[in-house]
Length: 284
Length: 236
Image (cartoon, rainbow over all chains, first blue to last red; front, side, top):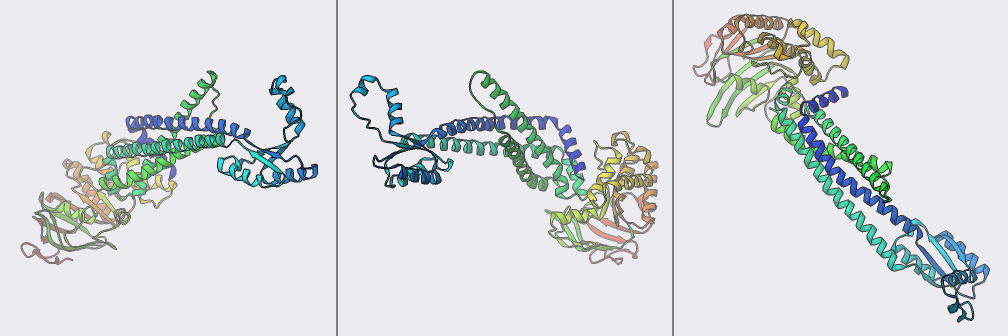
């Protein structure tokens, strides 16, 4: 029976090519726009996560902290916040001296730099709120002199990230509405173009499901095809940009599959919405 | 099987049927005769639930008039076989596909059963060699035969025919009437609505005569019913 529905959907597609191609073209345009935003968001997220990887919390130790106390603290921080790298006073001075002119260093009698722990935070802590909370907790350890984590920069990155997510969401919703609108009207027109056939089927006792299923398959096929073409367009764009030295990466397979899946799901919803209304109007 | 109880149908001010009562039993053959506008088509539409009575009740098997759900209305129509004056075949499908569509719609048969059922129906109407033809490639008589094959392919208990010979020349019409007689003789109840006396003469059984929306004669009775027909026909 499913084969029958597929054949019927194919027949409808062939007989109303003009409508079908118009729908595919419109859907491809809308999906390309959504896909472009997804591509940019994905690349921005990649860049942000790279920057996020570099986010770390620097824990300055009191001078009187001995080796045993330091090791206990490192172990606690490792458990609670992320991987810890110890930088001794000597290492800190060495790094500092490589960045500062010798004349200035000569003015300093003794190494004033404290030993520190560089904590590469767990992914769950890589946002401003969590980092502020973690810094507050760490600063309460008695061995700790001070905690720094670049609060302002972290906050700015977080704002940028949430702005992109919001933008993707808004564009996604607009495109979803556009897809439903395009398919809703395409299906209505297709059913009206096949009004006589629908009427005859209805008189022969066809259920709404029997009449509607081929139209639903047709809409889902059109959406899948449009999503595939949109992905191909985006892939071409990404390759072109990559060749121009823009370091864009393409959508991961799971994103691409979700993109096609979402288009098919929207087509299904649009088809059901359209058919529930138009079949009542057309069927005798 | 089919019962009309005091059925009145109005379209605005116009009365299509007025207080019509009659009953058709299993295996019966009824010809409904009347001029254009007498209410014959309304009568058929009431049976198929394309329209609802203004007052009164129409029952078809276990289905009664009123607000039937769409799924139940479809189910009701699947218990009927309907033949149309203008054939109502799908132009883009072959004769085989047109008949097979009714089998698919019935939903009672597996894919393997579709072909033998359709071929059997086409043989019954004398069209097995035209199974691959499109309606436009057939004569009017052949198209009506294809329509009849579609109506009988699911072996419905009742076959409704709306002017089955209306669009045919005499020879084809005689062939179609002979075919309907045979289908009825095999056990199906047959309700034919027509404007032609020849159809009445050609089919056995009962004749209902409609005039201006009134059932004026039921020939199983003694003739004119109340002049303007009110109350159940004697045959009901």
